Structures are given as structure tokens and as C-alpha cells.
Image 1 (cartoon, rainbow, N blue to C red):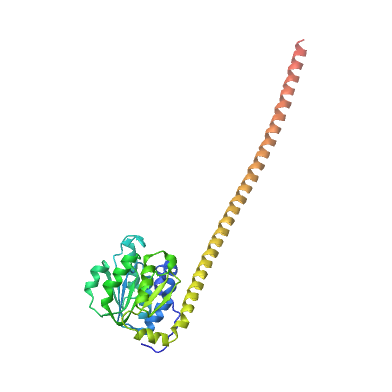
Image 2: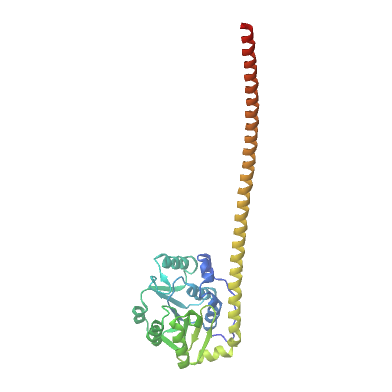
Length: 301
């Protein structure tokens, strides 16, 4: 574990394969988790609820860039639930293909199963960082924490997502309860909220405090909000450009219609002139025929 907290400001290669990760509810915490792993250099990370892998790939990016030997395990049914929605195999396939393209040489494992099934496969006191991000009800969050806490090492870390009050999730209520029992923690309220709990010893917590991390907490919040607003601004500018392009296309269609209308109007005018000329010729012919008939009648007279 390092003595100094470092700000790395890294890009995440997984975004090349899923651009929506940039605006995922977890996206605002990616730089923090990258820097946390850089500082701690954990042996084993376990994530409960990987979904598209926003947090998972932020952690694997740190492992890759820093050439760590960390083992990282993502556990999920990849079927969805009431908060993530129900989805098909395409989500897991995208996660797998991203690993194959960018993180193939890392010590990564995906376990497609329920959390309660997976917990028996881990030794007690084996996990350095446990990330709980499954179903966000009070009951489910409490069950995940209770079942998995024995698997966390002494001085290990448990991270909870979706702890902000404005989410309306029961995970917010459980976080408020648990942080009163285990008083060593850090928390963020942006990006749906993130709680960093030290439930089995304060050694890492004390070291992190001594690095001045508390002074950096607002940096991560404001940086993430800035990045989100920048993306929103880019999207708005793109929408404006697309709107302007559509308006230009409509203007061109109107101009084309106008030109076509003018051509047709000119053709109608020419046709009307021709008809008028032919009508005049017919009238003159009829007059001449009547004159001839009159002359014939006079000659017979």
C-alpha cells in the first residue's frame, strides 16, 4: 500500500465497446475507484452485480495499467431484476467480448449465478474489496452484506453503490444504518451515491485519512459533475447540429419544390399561350369558312 494518494486521470478502454458506460450511474466514481486500487494494490476484488461492467472495467483498467496481480471476480445472473430491468444474453456477451479485446491477460473471472450461491465458493477472510451493487432494496442489500462480510479480510473494504437519498432505494436506508455501527467510512452523494466502509478494522481507513483523501473527495464529485455536464453539452450540440442539418434539408426540399413549381407554372403559361394561339387560329378559320360560305351563297343567288 502506498503512502501517497495519487490522482491518475485515466481513460477507460471499455468505453470503446460501450459508449453508454460514460453516462452510467456508476460513471462518476470510476476515477476514484481507479485511484483507490492504485493505492491499495488488493489481492482479491469481488463485485456483486456487474451488469454492463461500468465499475468492473474501471477496476480492471487500474489492474491492467498498473500491472497488478490482483484477481477480480464479477458475479451476476445477467438476467436483470426490478431495478436494472430484465435483459437477455447480449449484456453478458458484451462484457465477455470487452474482456477478450482489452483485458484478456488479467486474472479475471465471471460467475453467472446468484450471490447466495456464489458466497459458499469463497474462503472466509479472503476478499480485500467487496463491491455490493445488486438489487437495491433494503432487504437485499442487508442480506448481501450479512452473507458476504465473513469473506472480507481483516481491514478489508466494502463498497456500496446507490446510497444517495434521491435514488429512493432501500440501499440508502441500509447504508445509513450500517455506517452508524461501523463508523469508519467515506461517502459520495453524486452519481447515485457511493459508500466506502471499513467494517473489519480501521488500519486502511486511518492510512487513507492520513494521505489527505478527505480533501480530495469534493474533487471527485465536482470532476464527475463537470464531465457529465460536458457530455450533456456535447449531446445537446450534436442534437442542435442534427436539427440544423434537418432544417437545411427541409429548406433544400422547399427550394426544390419551389423550382419545380416555377417550372410547372412556366409550362402551364406556355401551354395556355399555345392554346390561346390555337383558339385564335380556329376562330379566324371559322370566320374565313363563314365568309366562304357566304360567298358561295351569293354566287348561287
